Length: 169
Image (tube, rainbow, N blue to C red):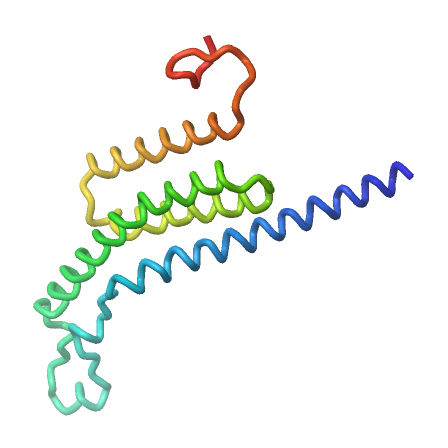
C-alpha cells in the first residue's frame, strides 16, 4: 500500500514536470513569435547578396566582402535587437508575475514563470553584445531584484518581516 502510494506520487510529480516543461516551451514560443509579429527581423540576404562560386569565377566581386553592406545589416540588426530588448524585459516580468500570482496550480504557474524567465533571457541576450557595461549591470541587477522580490512574495515567509516586508529581522 505504501509502495503504491509512493509510485503514484512519483507518477504525479513526473506528470506535473512534463506539464510544466510543456507550458514553459509554449509560453516561450508565444512570447517570441508574438514579439516577432510586430518587429521585422532583418535578414542578411536583404542587405548583402550571396554570390555563387560561378559568379566569383567570372570575376564578379562578392558583395559579402563589401563592408558597407555588412554595416547596414549590423545597424538594422542592432535596432531590431534594441526593440526586442525593450519589449521583452517588461513582457518577461509580466509573464513571471502572472505565473506567480494568477495560477494556483503549481505546474502551470511554474511553467508560466519559467517561460517569463526565458523571455527575459531571450530579450537580454539579443541586445547584450550591443549594450554597454553599465546597461548590462543595470539590467542584471533589476532582473535579480525583481526575481528575488517575486520569489519572496510567492513563498510568503511566515516569520516576522523586516526591511520592506521581505527580509527577516
